[in-house]
Amino acid sequence: MIPESRHIAHTVLIDSEANKVVLDESLSKFSQNLGKLSKKDRALANSIIFGTLRWKAKLDWTIKPFSNKKIEELDTIVIWAIRIALFQIMFMDKIPVSAAVNTAVNIVKAEAGRGAANFTNAVLRKVSIQYPQINLPDKTSDPALFLSIDKSMPLWLSKKWIKQYGFKECLKFCDVINTVPLITIRTNTLKTDRESLFNLIEKDVKNACFTKYVKSGISFTNPLKPIHETDSFKKGLFQVQDEAAQITTILLDPKPNETILDVCAGNGGKTAHAAQLMENKGRIIATDTSSKRLANLGEEIKRLSIKIVEIKQTNILKYNDKSFNNNFDKVIVDAPCTGLGVLRRNPDGKWNKTHKDIKRLAAKQKRLLGKAAQFVKPGGMLLFSVCSSEVEENEHVINDFIKQNNGFIIDKNLKNQTSGEQRSSLDSAFFTTQGFFKSFPHAPFMDGFFVARLIKKK
Image 1 (cartoon, rainbow, N blue to C red):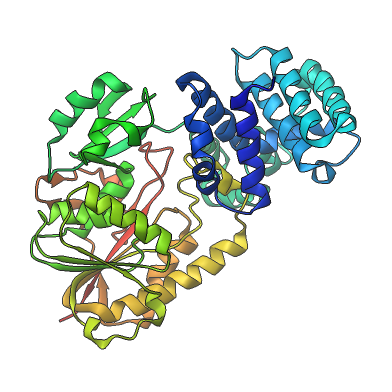
Image 2 (image 1 turned 120 degrees about the vertical axis):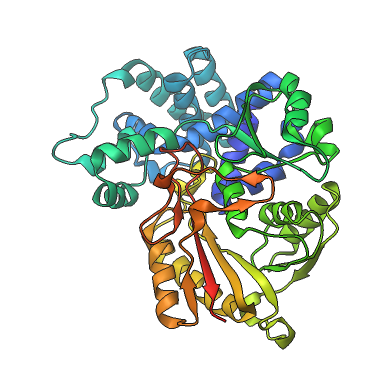
């Protein structure tokens, strides 16, 4: 019998690749299958899914000498079974080699036939013995290729980051990206306080601690059951949100009775946080193009007991209701981006992005900013954020916007920001000389984010 955890992991990885969807969508699609597993087996399945994606380049480099076919020529069922098995052999101490190999062979035999299973068996038997002796690219003659293989990063990104940050800094950067991130939640201060929430969840998780920079956050590892099944979640006492994303909303500085527009609301993390900081007083209009994301947002604000959010499905770039013009105290543009700042959480993002995506998305970010600018009141704020630390999606976007929109100025006072009880005691290192907020996964151990605050002249 094929162990269910490994079989589900194999199914999820193939589905994500075959249907060209982000990993979260495939995990959601097979959530019932994962939910039927024991806590131990569910943890194993998730470790295999995320770990195999994190280390895919290194796994493929290790497999290559033992296959008489190129990696890209192998059947999808076969290559993912081999990758999964090799990940367990190389990175999971408690999994016997025989169990990893036999499971892979049985999966391939059931789904692709005996011939493919024999091939899988032959490759894995050889590689499981010889993988410690596999040579890496030479660090001195080709540092980008070495980094790409040893730290399992796409080659184009290794080259880009070495040029931008230097080799030693890239090593630190990549080491953190390949770690399992803490789970971070934001206290719903409309219902409770952080200390009370901490006391409620501490018994159900490991390594719980308060976030360093935001006074509403709690981080932890190893929840005993899925977070959405906990009583605290069902009661709406918190929302899952990384500390960097929480800082973004604090920098918006939302106040009670203001009118705020969130033009790319998504699932509503920043929308809900803004409503908290406004003490459920005022008005927030949350727009997005996706009905699915807005449905999730609707469920979230209901769970969190938020009353001031109005949901509107629209493509803001094509929105021409003049009643929006010069009508909002603050406008949030949490723009679509490459997500290269959140690769710890979304390792599939390593393999489905290219340099062309940076250029394409930066162009869209500029269009969104230009459109959103018309909705801001004189004296109001336009806040731009992305979960990417790439300059093309950060400084270049804002500098281009300012050149095209002389009615706005960059607000450089972010480091002194206070929002109600949520005081952000941030280090100066978070702020660039131009006054932008910028975080990196390897420095403060939070997601990589960029935030710029623009003020419309009166």
